[in-house]
Each structure stands twice: as structure tokens, then as C-alpha cells.
Amino acid sequence: MNTTYPQRIKAVEFSTIIYLFVTGILIILNHQQLKAIESHLLIRLLVILFAGFLIIYNKIKKTGTTFQIIRQFWVLPLLGYFYGETDYLNNLLFKENLDSYFANFEFWLFAIQPAEVFSEIISFDWFAELMYLGYFSYYLLIIGIPVLTYIKLGPAKSERIIFIVVNSFYLYYLFFILIPVAGPQFYFKSSLANLPEGYLFGYLVRSVQVLGEAPTGAFPSSHVSICLMLLWLTAKNLKKWLTLVIPITVLLLFSTVYIKAHYLIDVLAAAIITPFVYCVSKQIYHLFTLKIKPYEPKFT
Image 1 (cartoon, rainbow, N blue to C red):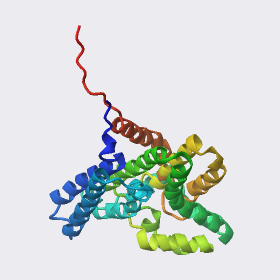
Image 2 (cartoon, one colour; image 1 turned 180 degrees about the vertical axis):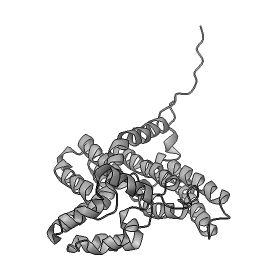
Image 3 (tube, rainbow, N blue to C red; image 1 turned 45 degrees about the horizontal axis):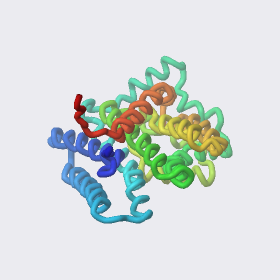
């Protein structure tokens, strides 16, 4: 009889625990230069205990669809917190953010600052609203594509997509911790006042930035990379929805620079590195979910 490891723990739960363990060790080793480490360690403990509760409860008691949905999706809301936390950890190796080097390289490469010039050249509110729409829709895709896959194709396909997205985020978060780049909106602070306000989505994006944005995670753009992964996963699993996802992806590619969330080189780097990060996450999931046949001695 074959045994499947994820019956005890899901791949996304395992990946989350590993990420919390690695960053927890990082916090402990650097406790002298970090503030309030107790709260960050406590959150890690609570998340791990919650994961353990779900695993044990699922094992000892038959659970319904609602519980399975919770276990499938509970990690996704935590991504925003883990992203913001990279700002807490990203000056351990480099004491200052590296934006001056990235901005200077971008100017050397293009002879302009694209994030500065883009919104100045096209300053119409209606165009800005399209950019804000594309940027905000990214958050909807992260939830929407796994949910839609769950409804249309079942929990197994959705679980795989969730793992690829979440594990890829963790890989980027670790990179953001090592290479601290805040992005144009923080490096060129005065230029934010020149951004067209747009309308509804302009208000929503600014609200999200006030609540959850931090001077971290600019290079490479995880927004662009994850969106490209979701586009690819949609093409493989939900082709009928490409007519919606493709325009959102195109708008996002432009919007990250337009609203000064990223340098143009962040976008280009993300496009280049995305296949590699995707393949790494996909391979980890494959290895984790691989069915292992028990040893059966053969007698001759």
C-alpha cells in the first residue's frame, strides 16, 4: 500500500513552517539589533500551533468541506504580514537600503528615471485609474485564481496552485531580507505628490499602501512575478478566464512603474527570474507530494 506524506501535513503548511523557522532563527541570531523580537517570535509560535491544531484535528476527526477549505486557504491572508515583516528584517546584512545603487543604475541604463517620468508624461486621471485598477486587481488574482480553480477543478489542483504562489512568495521574501530595496515611492518621496489621483481604484490602492506598504520588497518585483505565474497557471487550467487575466497582467506590468512602486529594472528582473522561481516551487511541490512505495523485498 502506498503512503502519501501530505495526508498528514499539506505542502503549503510545511513550507510556511520552514519559512517561519528560518526567519525565526534569523531574528534570534540578530536579537541585539532588532526591537521587540518577542512579538515576532510569538506570532511564529501561534501560527505553528494553529497549523499543528489543523493537522491533528484533521487526523483524529472526520471533517467536512468547510474545514477542508479553511485548511486549504488559511495561509494566504498571512502573506501580507510576512511581506511587511521583511522591512523589519531587511537591514541585517546591509544597514541602509540599496536604492541609490538601483536608481543610479536605472539612470545609466535608460538616461531617465522611468518611474519618475511615466506619470509625468501621461498624467490623465482616466489613465491613472487604469493603472490603479491593474495594480489592485493583483490582490484579487492571488485569492481569485485558487478559489476559481477549487470550484472548477477541485481541491487537488487548487492546493498545487496555492503552494506554488505561497512558496514563491517566501522565496522572494527571503531575497528581500537579503537585498533591501525600498522602491521609487520611498526613495523619491516628493514625487508621489505628482501622481494623478484617479478615481475609485486610485483611492483603494492608496488605502492599501497606507495600511500594508513598507519600504521593502522592490527588487525583483514579486507583484510582476506572481502575476506572471498566475497568468501561466490560468492558461494551463482556466483558459476561458484568460480574457480577464491577460489585460490585468498587462496593466499591472505598467502600473508598478507608473505608481512608483518599482523601478523598471525590478519589472525586467522579475520577468527574467519568474520561470526559475516557478520551476523551483513546482519541483518542491512535486517532491513533497511524491508517493513513495514501501520497500518490498524480492526473493529469487
